[in-house]
Image 1 (cartoon, one colour):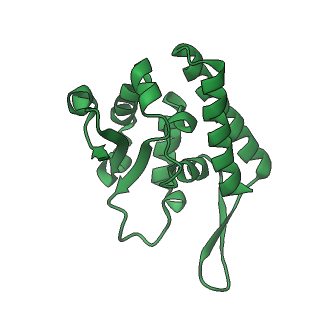
Image 2 (image 1 turned 90 degrees about the vertical axis):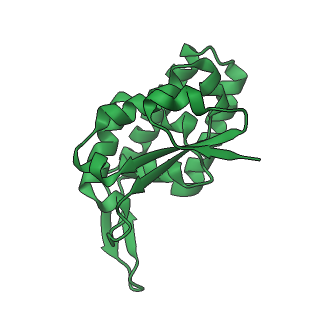
Length: 176
């Protein structure tokens, strides 16, 4: 049976059990508005500081922003959210290794790192546009950070390639 945990940075080790398979990065509106980058980075460091957690929680991090349910905009269209996310990314860029593909967290993270344009389609949906060269730069940056993490924790070349291939496949499915 899978278990999801919610914890602050200080209590992570105490709540990780053998049946934990997903970690939710739960970010509140209050954290976004106060730009609490350090607290969020502290939580994420629990995943990347230990080799066993780096291995165990690959592709298992889910992003969750609370307090925006009544906001009609998508998270990527809320400047405070994208600003906070980019500030976190500047200190902890290991998204490509950890983010879950199943929950669209990788797609959301990538979009928050892009300068998106938007327009309303005929059916009323908001459509996003982006610069392909910026997308390429974001992906290269994510790959470099992931490779650094893999080197730091001595992942084998085969394991690193497997993780990279899955990540790039997920990104290709989302953006191409």
